[in-house]
Amino acid sequence: MSKREEYPGDDNYSSVNHVADALETPATAGHDAEADPFAEDTGSEPKSVPETPDQESGMVGAATKSSGAKRRKGKKPISELAPLEFSGRFAGGVRADLLRRVPLYVSDWTEAFTGGNCMKTTASICFLFFACLSPAVTFGAAFADATDKQLGVIETIISSGMSGLIYSFLSGQPLCILGATGPELAFTVVFYEICQSMEVDFLAARVWQALWCSLFTILVALFDLSACMKVCTRFTEEIFSFLISIIFIVGAFTTLIKLYLADPDIEGDDPAAPANRAKAFLGTLLGLFTYFTAMWCRAFPKRNETTPLVRKLVANYGVTLSILLYSGINYGFRDVDVPCLDMPDEIVPTATLNGTGESRGWFVNPFGDETASGYDTPGVGFIFFTAVPALGLAVLGYLDQNLTTLLINRKDHNLKKGGAYHLDLLVCGIFIYPICGFFGLPFTHAATVRSMSHLMSLMTREDSKNEHGQTVSKVTNVVEQRVTHLGIHCLLLAALGLSAVLTKIPKVVLAGVFLYMGVTALPGVQLYERLWLWLIWDPKKYPQYDYVTQVARKPLHLFTLFQFSCLAVLYALTKVPNPYISVIFPFFIAFLPLIRKLVPKCFPSVWSKEDLKALDK
Image 1 (cartoon, rainbow, N blue to C red):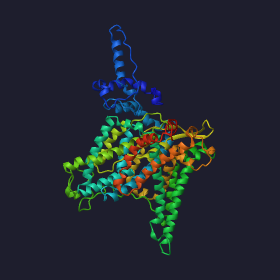
Image 2: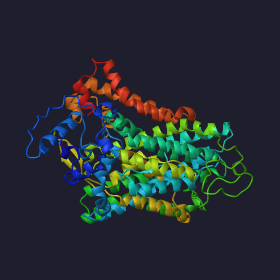
Image 3: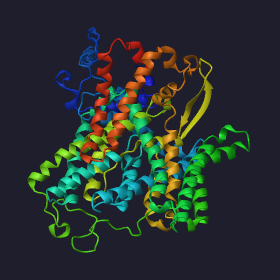
Image 4: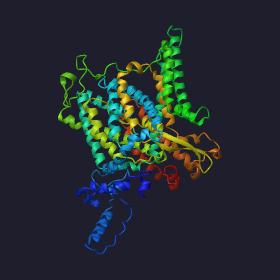
């Protein structure tokens, strides 16, 4: 594979090859690939290099021998490494990521304002601000309930904003959004209950958990272990992507349904019943119309009305306009009392000192404070014990980070700048996890739907005909830059001082935005497309996707059933109320590549190699 094939659109490789040689220290350059567990197995014998007779000083022959010996050891220059390739060197993957991204760093900032990208950039910031604020508030309330207010809304917003600021400057893939996630909440609940049962200061113990997690994550980055993700095929990626979309869609409808269940006197002759029915009905209309309006705006460029500039404005700012429109309508019917966003009034920690009403300090003492917390300080044994839950947390971060980045970097998204998987994990390990621990903030991980929504808000798509005459939508351009990431999280932190305004936004309006995010993340997911085939009884009427034309009907549907079954198990794990079972979720995801490998081998008569290649390429 050529450099151009490995890193499409990147013109910087020829200019940085000499930098790669400088980055190879004598210790790593002379390292024996046979003794290195991370050396790549090329699968074939290297070509022999004939000895060259000494010419003049004999340097040519010596250089050729040295080059041939290096190739025989399976080494590649760092500048030629693919994003998910073992380097065979200490921190080789991180150095390859830096070589790939550093030459593009200036364009990461300027591209947001060049080539007519300014409108799309500002629209993305406005949309993703609301898309990130609502989950932060929702998860913050859940953290407060689960940890007896040791963590809360204020900490979750600060955690998301702080992580975003760091990530916007230092990450290798700034299109990825960090934030609180459901699995992280489950891990926190389990760790809190462990600390409660052992009567240990929870926040102090979290500092040690953060430090252990940071150590594990840094080691993963330095030893190129993100390269293990190359075993993840479309099978695993799409299950994970589909799952997160379902969670957002179900969560949106759950918010609407709760309007009818929150008040037991919504029916009958109770005097409050008419008001409760009005609240539920108005809330439902606001939520659904927010979704439909955003979808209408998204499709507006395909219409012929108005000028191209107006169509572009409506499409780019559609979600923001929908939020403002229906928040304004709700304000006009404020007597109906539809529930609105809950925001903290003060920027102070949620936890209070033991026996007092005063808030704790922002910095958490890793050795605890018995008078402040009322619990024992972590002992040496407990400090080492926290390495166990920290390992699970590191695995969760590894999977969330890499799977989300894999989805973003997919070939059909037509990104021009290479990925940087090892660098992204290193940034999390060195900066984000320790800061979250020492300041008592929830840990953040890559949030899949928010990241994909960020990506799609910066995309330009065009419809075209495939070889079967069917209309398909292809990505023609993505504004790959860091400005939106920075702007989103600056606004997120600024929201702490705008609670008086933001508390006027109905929760159901943001539920409509969640529904929009979940639905718009589904197109292009082949599992989603193949599920729709179950509703088409005449195979002649199947859409002529490549895999439909290349795979027989029976193995096609059985593969869909196999993949959907794994999805169902994963979704069930997210709904188990016991957090000790819920924490299995990330480990099941880690086993999906193995399941994908083993099950077809157990049923060789069902799927041929050609079928699997077409369905899971």
